[in-house]
Image (tube, rainbow, N blue to C red):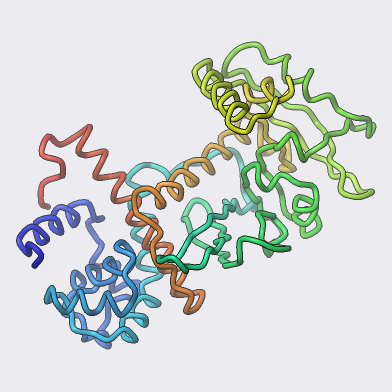
Length: 371
């Protein structure tokens, strides 16, 4: 039998990390209302939801665990309904935790009329030997971290890879992506719909041209940056079929430590895969290279690089979901419940980060005092 006292103590520690207004948010977002009488309180609802989201239990397993622990007595169908209504609650909680870290107050450049969207994809495997492998494609809006796009696909086959072509694009959207999205067809898709691209360059897929449509020598250009932290930009074009797309290359040289880490990683990859990389590959590893179609007057070289850094922070959060929170059982009932589940995972990841931060930097007993 589980140690109930220990579970209650751990729950109180976890609650101390929640935003102060987490209960009020439950009512404001509609997650907790009179019609949800099967849950006695916001705590009962949250504990039950976290059993499903954090522990990876199925809906049926979750309601059994909740009943045995005297948390709630509900059916799996009722829990699914509560999960659907918890989407905005989880999202608001994530926003509050990110605001505590100063993330949501970050303002860079003059982006009036431009909506910044962070795009990524990750693979998840359902539990068990026969569990299916899925790829989650998603888009988050800055600074409120609202998920405005969500899609599940297989991991193999045509149209399942990382590409901007998955996304619905509105005029004024700026799509921020990593190297997996650095290909001309995806960038052209954004351009056709009146959006902007901000993507880290994959030198194996993107070729650049001068304004006169001659080949641009990226290798010799980046070598002009001699000092760590030095940045520079060049106006270039990329080619999709017979069409050229105008943009800028914004480049910054990494620190010596970051360069050494990148070079060591490439050498390990050479040994592991028994391959020999070109000299250019080792040189490009010394820089962060961004291609963007954002207007130069409103977004300087440094502001473009800073916007990409924000994308990197979000990527770290989602990567930690695999190692810290565990992706567990992916519900595929509908888009709403799936989004709610993802927000729940993000909430757990942010709580874990906060707990680690308090334990290592602030509180000698590992958590903050009760409010």
